[in-house]
Length: 164
Image 1: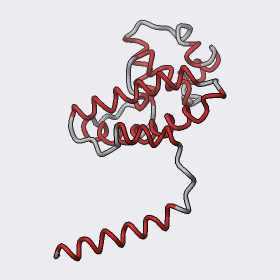
Image 2 (image 1 turned 30 degrees about the vertical axis):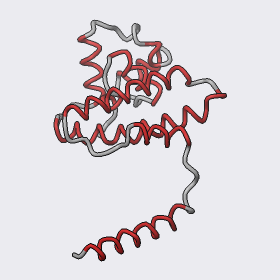
Image 3 (image 1 turned 60 degrees about the vertical axis):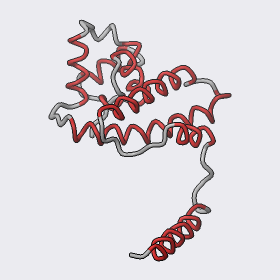
Image 4 (image 1 turned 90 degrees about the horizontal axis):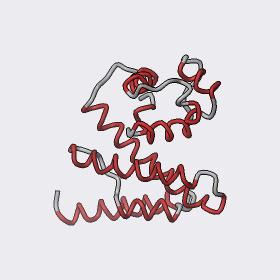
């Protein structure tokens, strides 16, 4: 394929993507800024995995701090959107590198046991004792807030608690 053909194909792709751009909602400025700072890409090395995990951890901590602040809604939404993008990349890498038959609930129970915790110790992370009981008995799945809190408590990726 000649150089002229490559340029023409790229120009055609550019034109086609620009047509699609007008059909999507405007992007959140905070999301775009995070995309510029640490552009998402397929994770292929352990070092890249570590970098994206650290970014996800920092974003999760921030999201927990600004969770109920209406004046920071746009920042929160941009950070959450970016977190979803890199969570997918991390999950894909981890599925390939660390295959496992355990469920998120199995992992949670293992972490609870390893840390010598009880259901009561975790009640606040679950939003109350009844929620803790429902999740740990398998009657209810973890919600996003619970996943974030547990990831911070146990210093693991939020993906640890998602079924993939």
